[in-house]
Picture 1: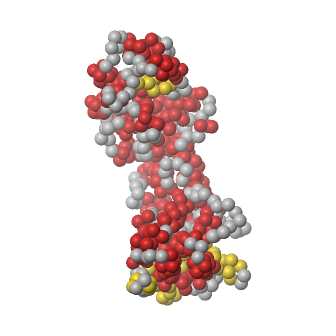
Picture 2 (picture 1 turned 120 degrees about the vertical axis):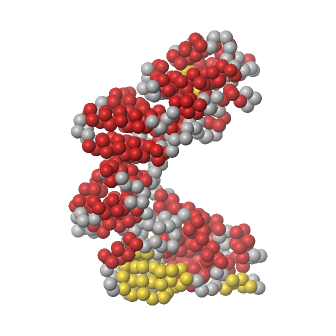
Picture 3 (picture 1 turned 120 degrees about the horizontal axis):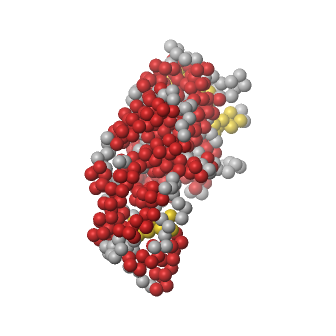
Length: 582
């Protein structure tokens, strides 16, 4: 293998007549606060101060591996991406901070950073020293450019959000009040010098540059690298293989890079990430592989290492189709559920996601990807069971661990994949229900259900009281023979909620009521400047058309106090179990 290695520093790296490209197969910028905090304060710790004077010291930042010739006009960054990106962000933060002081000398320092180390002119043309496609134009416009005629763009992917967080962090740490404590400075002149010396400490830091001319060797090295900072993820390694097998088009279009970037942007808008999706996608597609977060790369190699580019393209097409399905499972688009008979589906999928049992996504992805069509009724009953199970397992205080559902959902995905008829799909559903119900003990469920509560003040403050709302509305729907929530539902505390009456928050004191009736009660209470008792509310409750209210009034005719609330909470728990799990 041909390579060239030499000692250099960051200043030489950035002033060389070449620019540095982040290869299309590279992982995204992934450093977290602990990484870039260490980066900054490692630098600062090397700066010596004596008699109000600053001095930089020798510091080694490790190896950097590049694909290409050292005398070429550009090279690809194989190892060192995270450090080089972070250094660029720190220089940009120093530039902004120095410009912000409005001092002439500080402006000169800032100009040098911008014109020599971030965007350098080569033969009159501006050359961005670090070039990337995955975070363009965000990285270019908000970090590398100090002034641009275009409006600043907002982050659209998780990578861009991490870039923004890093930039914001450095800007906050470089403020006068922070530097005052770090360097014991006492005036603006010392402050500017402290910023200049952080810049110089970075630029003087030593590295070993290694230039490799063979792409295949560079890719192999990339697979085995664990750089300073976060190690490569399984999906980082898989991405490397995929990109190495799909070339740009004859017209120079990097389609796979664009596609992968679109994946990142799509997944960043929901409660997941690309690593989690890929694992769930693999489990749903190849349940027989028993893939997990540690062996996923090896599973991919066994199936695709020897495949050609066309086969990989089909794999990407399947991945893209299932990503769209996956996003719909997590955050269903209401525009797709406008028909009345489909509203239940949107509501139940949303409820499942609220209870945070992410393993179910594997089963749902397998089901929604099958070509076998099942009826709306079958689908509704299955989603209803999953929603209720996740409420029981993760919405109340049962000790069900998420990983206990891994095997049942894997087996379901396998059965769905192998199914040839609707009957076999139904059989897989029944088998899954049985396996999941083995995880819930009825007496434990009853005890946990009884502790549910609802406080409107906490609800308005954004605290999640969803399980209580879910439970009472689910019972109301069943008694009303409805598939989805009534738009007129409002949560009603039978005895007005009060910190002086703690049991008033308990689910036994919760019911649903038509909004217009609830408003009439509130209006009359305000007019009379009093809180209605249970007996006074009864006259309003009797006008309700909801069966849950009618059954309640049949059971409690005279009084409704603490003992009755406790009694009703247990009755509600029994009712929920009998309606949905018996």
